[in-house]
Length: 224
Ligand SMILES: O=P(O)(O)OC[C@H]1O[C@H](OP(=O)(O)OP(=O)(O)O)[C@H](O)[C@@H]1O
Ligand SMILES: Nc1ncnc2[nH]cnc12
Image (cartoon, rainbow, N blue to C red):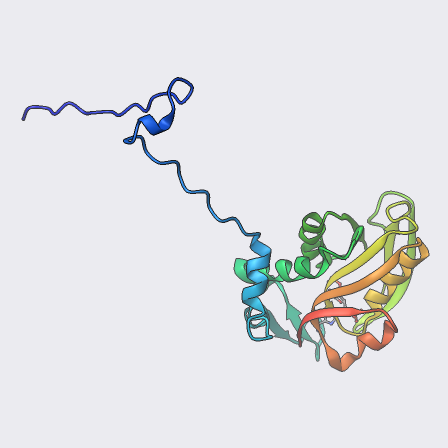
């Protein structure tokens, strides 16, 4: 079969001749209508006063009975992390809430506050400060002891990580008795920070953790 020579159209360089003289030249690509992703998601999410993302977040959390001790219904967020949409929505909801609140520090509580805290801190332009179990931080620390639903523990924070006047957001996966968040708030306030809010993915309302936090505001996505 004879080969057909291919025709290539070369548009003239616009530096030499104006483009209206060349009606066959391809039109420029349309400029897409750019809308910040978080605004469109928020509008969609709040359509009828309810955030449609919450049902998926809630159903992605697995409950393991009798872990780590008999009688504890353990709320396992590792299954939320397996669902990238639920994980993304979780971070988006927090970012939407805090991005205009002038937060300068996101304090994440070990261990699962280390999963949710850093992406929020990056998105809202705040520093991330880890609140750790004892003897994990290498520098000079201040510490607070606290009681748990199943035992006692201690929390530490690096001296100098938080300054007087910092506006802090505390992030964890779950509030049960509120002891853990209280210890984090005490550390931040000892360093001179103003704690704007504590935020968790899950609340166990029967354990009345909010009451322990007094006047401090607690924001949660789902109740267990
Ligand atoms: O409101 P509270 O009664 O204080 O309990 C809430 C805390 O308990 C869980 O952590 P846990 O102490 O099990 O430690 P881990 O994250 O290291 O597993 C949870 O991640 C919170 O940090
Ligand atoms: N029921 C629970 N599930 C997960 N983490 C917890 N921390 C305290 N109580 C908890």
